[in-house]
Amino acid sequence: MQTEATAERDARLVNAKHGEINPNDIAVGVVIGRTSEFFDFFVFAIASVIVFPRLVFPFVDPLTGTLYSFIIFALAFIARPFGTAIFTAIDRNYGKGAKLTSALFLLGTSTVVIGFLPGYERIGIWSAVILSVLRILQGVALAGTWDGLASLLALNAPENKRGWYAMIPQLGAPLGLLVASMLFAFFVGNLSAEDFYDWGWRYPFFVAFAINVVALFARLRIVVTPEYTNLFDNRELRPAPIVETLRAEGRNVVIGAFAPLASFALFHMVTVFPLSWVFLYTRDDPARFLTLEAVGSVICTIAVFISGALSDRYGRRKLLMGCALAIAVFSGFAPQLLDGGFAGETLFMFSGFALLGLAFGQSSGAVAASFSKPYRYTGSALTSDLAWLFGAGFAPLAALVLATEFGLIAAGAYLLSGALCTLLALRLNARWEIRDR
Image (cartoon, rainbow, N blue to C red; front, side, top):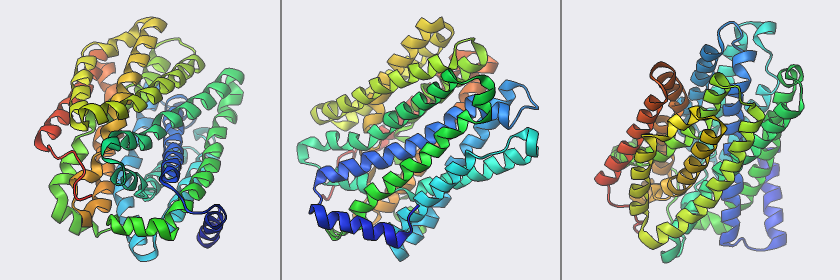
């Protein structure tokens, strides 16, 4: 990966050749950046189900191995707030270019090293230790990839297009899942089990490194230019000390972290958890189910676009409350569909992804709205970290434990709790429109 100075120099050269960047360039940079982050996320998540239990934990049964993998999966979310503290300091002292370059270099390096991970049969328990350390480094790095572009995009949106612009960053999730699931489906479906577990599963981690390089350049092309530096400053999207931000905006950070829990809980209930349930408790072909997830991600993408139009017409808060209520209803019956064969799985996945797109499309759109200008940048980053930790970090682990012990209806109860948290948070905070624009 390029050094910081080289990357920033090349980014400025591109801007000099092609003129000033327009708002559409912000959108492109946001989508590319978010897609790369979620691709890394889903590559690890899929491997946590179909690779790591066999590679790293072959000394226990498949269910226990998957639970161990999900514990390691959660480490990244625990590490993210610490990463925010580290990279906020880098941002304040050395600028966004240094922050993004170092964060994406760390993310790409830790991800590609996972692709070379030796299994338990070669190095014993050290395989799990190394995987845990690399997962923590991924979490620290993911916090550093917060560039403020999504907030900048929302704050500069036309009055009647705020919902539309707010949904653009959320497109990265279904697009990242689409690429990750299709890559794994290809290798699972076309390689023998021996070849897949020997070397096939490693390729998506190598691809992740290449995507991070593209994402780095796409984002540096924007954040290092004088035009957008001025925009960041005018909107006061500058890093503030963590302690000072929590002292001034602690209430908004907490409420903001709980507001998207319905969509974040659903996020894993239709992506990671069903894959683990089908892989452990059915005889379905993993490649077929991964392809089903890829189709679901397309449905989710369409629904994210629709969320933007609905938000602009009816208001973001009404849409989020409506989606939370729909998720509460969904939680009461949908998880049981996973025991209904391929037809039940398809109905669960497609309806779940459609609902996810509507809810997730606006779940982060108002994050910057609740903070006063001096704390908008850091407050948004902290809120995002905590929302993913509370809503998503332990979701696959909790859902699988509950479903195994008490049946799929218990996994639905976990999803219901997320919906109730969202409704309560929205009730406590009615300020879901951008202020002091």
